[in-house]
Length: 355
Image (cartoon, rainbow, N blue to C red; front, side):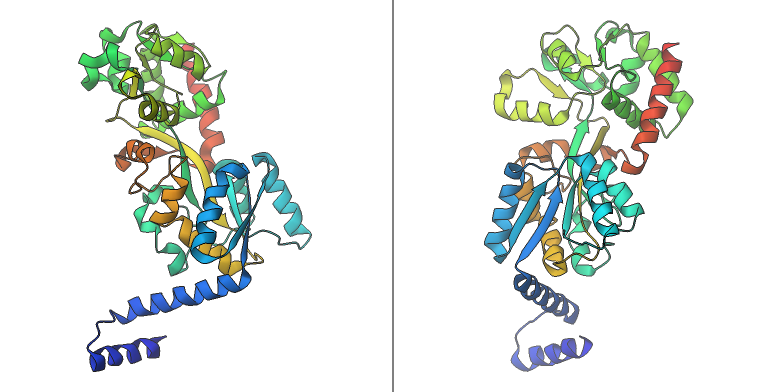
């Protein structure tokens, strides 16, 4: 490749055509070689938890661009890892790409060495556009499930600067106006409380004291996010601290416009978990898998995925994504490998605070 680069530089000087830096030309040649090899394979096989209708736009866009089929098989998240472990144990390598829940699928697959490390320059080319904390060495967290402080705009209009986690716990103006999900009865509420623990620098006592102060504000406590969303819309409470999906709120803001009364505190931390995508080791179509990963992590690919999801690449034009990812520094990922630990710790914190 070094010789190729030197020859191209000579050609550029001789012809006066600006062909670019040798390293850029080398990347272009490598990409063209990858496309040709992937098209020869002709198919990429994906195992995941997305329903066929959700994957169809990705498959169609990829086929239209490269002429390569995407065959997708839907499985329940809890069944994907056992299936792959059994197949690899039997010497079968039927799948190229895996997608789905990062905690349930990708953590054990990485531990078992079934994922390709993302170290190839072609695979890494697009990843600089993502917040580094959402990129693992073996997979990309590409679809997000975000939570944050949600409030009723009519009730909180004059107090938006005080919609912070700390102020909600200590300012008497919020007494009787807060909704809170029960972290013992709801696993997702416990996960959200685990995010607040991360936000407080993993200071357990600070989190306990904060929650004790919140409980002194006489919140309405319920494990059901739907119940609290309705309570918020009807102004039974004015602010909900944990557990309402910002995806739901964003879609309603987009679809219902100014008549929709809810929004979230845009200057406060957003806690995200979600779905990941990666390449399986020893896959039957390695070039097609590599090309698919390169495409789906590009702005073009993320635009397609972002038509129905909140994605982790901030520069896509999806309004829902741009709303959630407007301030990437405020996004706090819940590390997939620590979710069970964080849920258990959050439930202990809840019990200690409730007394």
